[in-house]
Length: 86
Image (tube, rainbow, N blue to C red; front, side, top):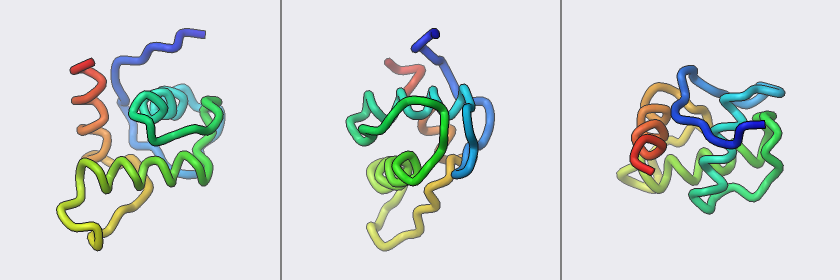
């Protein structure tokens, strides 16, 4: 399959399975060095943990602030900005 993706168009969350945008997210997080799991499009605990790490790195002013582990509009916007920049 095609390993390149240019942007995420939908919000992503744990429990999604065999999803191409989740696969794109996993490839992105792998490239960021914060995901070491299987890139198969299943949004499980490893993907969620990597998203939390991404949120802590890029979106959270304080480590005590809330991280959701979901890819909502704010996280998606930041992922897309980085995808476009590469």
